Length: 314
Image (cartoon, rainbow, N blue to C red; front, side, top):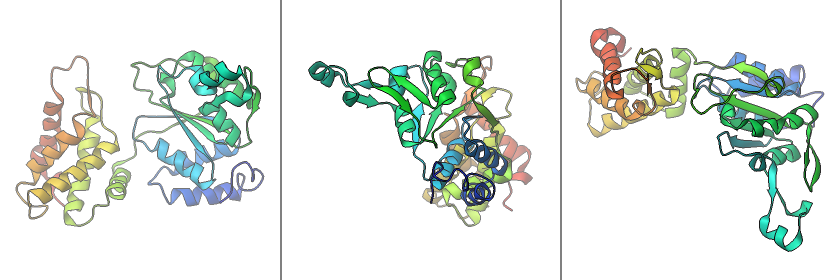
C-alpha cells in the first residue's frame, strides 16, 4: 500500500486512481459515482465537502480512501465548542509556567497533527463549528501552511487535505459558511441510495442470512425509507435505523421462538423492533400533532395491513 504524497505522479493519476477506485468500491455498497468524484478531487490536491443527510456512507467512503492510500484520518466533530485553539493547538499551561512559551511545549491540535502527518483532516458537522474556527482553515487550505504563535510556520505534507461533511437539511445550531471557506472547497452531494442498495448495506452490516433475513431486511429498509417521506416528519431515519431494526427484529424472533417468516406473530414482532430502532431517530415536524409511535404505526399499517402483498416474503 502506498501513500498519496509519495506517489503523486503515478498512483493518484490515470490508471493508478482507477485501480484504487476498483479496490475501494469492492468494500462499499454502491456509491460508485460519488467515490469516483471524491477520488478525483483528493488526487488533484483539492479539499472537499461531502454534503448529505446522516447515514449516507460519507464517513465509510472517506475511511476506505484513507485506508487504501495509507493516509492518517484525523477526525474532528464540529460543534459550538470547537474553538480555534482546540483546532490548531495550545501550549501546555504547566510547562509554560515553568519554562515560558516555546515550540517544545506546544500541544498540536487536529489541524496541525493532520498537516504534519500528511493526513486528512475530517471535520464532521462542519457547519456547526463557529465561523472564526472555520476561518482558521483558510490559510491551511490556500497556502498549505499556518502560522502558529510562538511556534512558527507549520507547513503541510503533500497528502494533507481538508475534508468536511455536513447535513444541509438540519438548520438547528448551524451557521452559514462564509464565502472565503466555500470558495476553497469542492462539493459533492451525497443522497440516500435506492432500496436495493440499502438492502445490500443492511445485509452486509448485519450478516443476517436465511429465510427470516430474506423477509426482515426488505421490511426494515421499506419502513425506514417510508420515514423519509412521511408528511408529519421533518427528518426520517438513515439506513442505520434499518440496520438496527433488522438486528432487533432478528433477536425478538429468536426470543419469541417464531417458526419462520410466515408466523402470524411476525408483523407485531416487527413493529416492536420498529419502535425500538426508529422512534428515537425520526424528528416530528414542528406543527405535527402526533407522536413518533403513532407515525411508526401508520407506516407499519401501510406495509403490513393496507398493502400486505409487499410485505410477503419473496
